[in-house]
Image (cartoon, rainbow, N blue to C red; front, side, top):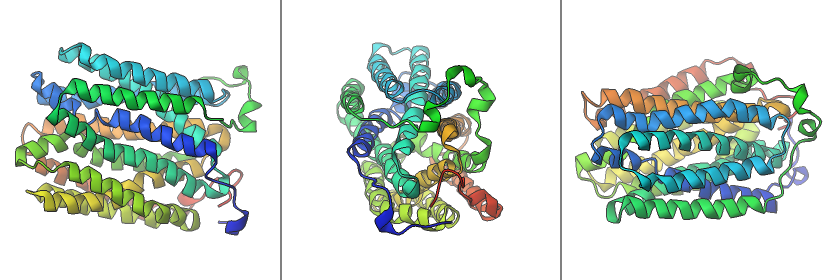
Length: 402
């Protein structure tokens, strides 16, 4: 891979990139507060184990269905209004949650939420890679991915705290406020649309669900993402239920220490990607995540939760941004919207299918064993990455010079 001296690299922390990272953090926090709290809330309404799994699954279906269409629009559309519509839609759906206590209606809201989440996450990630200099894509998308990871880690602990100490409605209000702040930030950003995208006219691009769903140049890292998030799905669906089973009141430590560790290691992992590529990084991060999930499964107090959270932050917290950078580094600029949609769809399908599958498995075994079983998907990630051909790790030579 071709390298440049650091003094000649493009500027990363522009005003637009900084605002985009912060806005994406708030939108992820607004969304992620609901991930660990909706399942126990639905359970209290009388939902079965399968219906609890469906809370995650129907969300994923909505996200997956919209992403090919958004990827198609991103091939020729300016970014601004796509981003604002996505953020506004998420805010509206969030406000709808307290309006019913009927499980079926809540599942419908989850589908609509997934629909808008698929829209928003795809366009936001594409806007980020448009702004980041090509010679700093690993570092830049690592920091953008940090907004995703920190949002995924801090927000659940905030959501759990509000849900357990106040009410579901109070948590929804807090989530809506974060979503509103994100919408304001998105509205003042100056977006960059690649010239190659501006030159394409709508009539020159034919919509194909499969063509807008899969980007063949980067299918392998998307497949790895699917495996990793399938393993992770048991955490987001069952960790609060696990804490209730074990009587652990300090489960929030898992998320807080996760966030702190992920933040501390991000500058190192981002630069490692730019200099050495994804292979070793993905293997090491998957190994740390595997160990973390086993420590979590044996935890009976705050000590095990704390150790597991730190390892999970270093592992999974670095793995997902590395996989996103890998996907985008292998994709031509005109197809990055499609590739980004494919990446996020892999996350949603992995987590959604995990919630459904392990929701059924949970009828027969305890939650700790769910964590142990699902952890082996990270061993599968290590195996596939270890034995992949070298061409799998090359960047797209025409667009990325790292």
